Image (cartoon, rainbow, N blue to C red; front, side, top):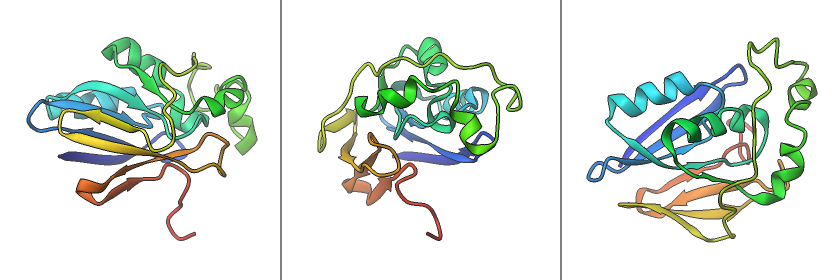
Length: 163
């Protein structure tokens, strides 16, 4: 499995690309707002996006998901319990003293998920099975992805380093 984790955007949200080396299919988790970087890494590793998973609907995680979907055709997966946050996407940067203009970004188009996974549901691409774990707290719809075959947990903002 290819695992690429890197910070995106001003707040440094961790974006993760999980790629299957046999099929060249990938899951992109939390693309944030840095689509050029995400696309460059996908191209470098010759990966095709099959799913876009959002751990929660805060702007630093979800801002470019719709744009990535338009480019790749991949469905967007996140917990529908975060739809109230989606409805406030225009205001979210102000919660941390920022603005869309100050970020150099237009207010993004954010839509309901193409799929809202159930707790313990397995999100799969060829060769990679990720178990969805509901972890409400940071947001009502926060979720983590657990890939037991690779001893990996993608926690979004459920866990922070040093906390």
